[in-house]
Length: 178
Image 1: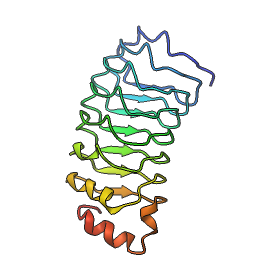
Image 2 (image 1 turned 90 degrees about the horizontal axis):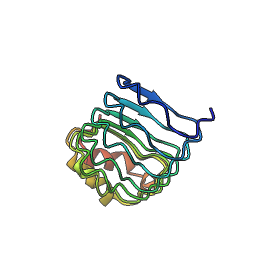
Image 3 (image 1 turned 135 degrees about the vertical axis):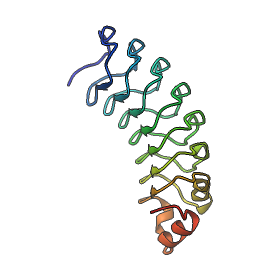
């Protein structure tokens, strides 16, 4: 697709799902009338900043992987967000998720994250996919202990996985894993 600008959606007030992936979109804009939107897919675009989502109070799923996002911001008003897919960007940390306490699934694979500060606020987190990052110490993994609902953790292709006791230590550190 060749869509470069989000526009002409104002009349679609009942829209529940919007898929704009694999385009040339650089900016999140003109979504303020889509108050019933539950799912927003913006993967594989050229977006560098999460913005203009404040009116999407009903948003449950945001998929914004494979863009140019370096910092998590602009999600503060999405307190009902349950799934966030933000892999393949350039994130270095998870700061900015403190208000998103309803997140159950967080995918941050293929970024540059080396610490998990911020994940402790996600008390409903069940699925945490963080493969191909730069997590290198068990101290970082221990931060996931504050997530009592955690069932699945992917940390493959991080420095920590090179530990010969990786699986055993992961299960001991996070006994809720299935």
